[in-house]
Length: 197
Image (tube, rainbow, N blue to C red; front, top):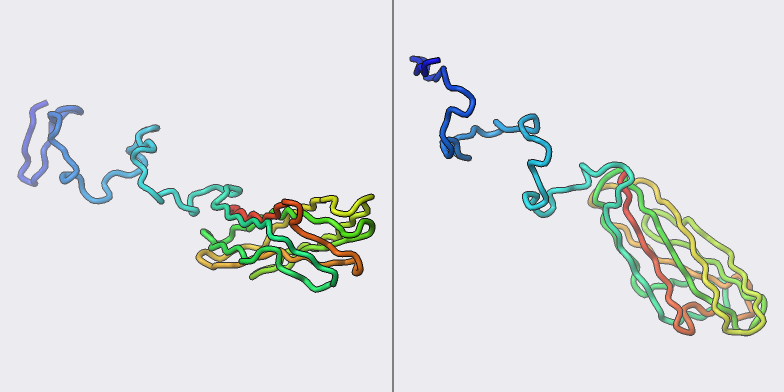
C-alpha cells in the first residue's frame, strides 16, 4: 500500500515496523498514551521501580507493611500490685495504611526471689488498647530461676498516618515475694507488625 499524507494531517499506508528505529522517542508520545494494556509481561523489572513506588495501597491483604521493635535488659523488681512499664521508652508506630491491623508479640522474662509462689501479670498498654493480661506463676525449687512468658494480640483497624505508642507493663499478683524482670541477663521484647487489611 502506498504511503499517503492526507490533507487532514494524518498518514496512511504505514505497515507495522515501517518506522525506522529511533523515530519515536519519549517526547513524541502523548501524555497517558501508554497504559498497562500495552505493556507485556516482564516489561518492568526491579531496576525500573523507583524507591517508595510500592505502597501499602497495592499490597494484598495479609502483607506485612512494617515491623518495629523495642527490647530491654534493664532490671525491674516489684513487690506490689502497681503496673510498671518494662521499657523505658514506649514503642511508637505510624500506620502506613487505613484498615490494617497491628499484631503485637511480647516476650517477658522474670523470676521470684525467694523461691516458691511468686506470680506476675503483664499487659499491653498504649494508644489504642490495653488488651492482654496474663497471670504467670513461678513455683520453682530455687530462687532466681528464670521463666519466660509470651503472648500475641491483634489490634483494631488503623488510620493512615496516625502514630500510636505502646509499652508492656508488669505487676506482682502475689505480693510478698519479689518478682524480678530481666534479671540474670534476660531480655524482654515487644514487636509490632502492621498487617494490611
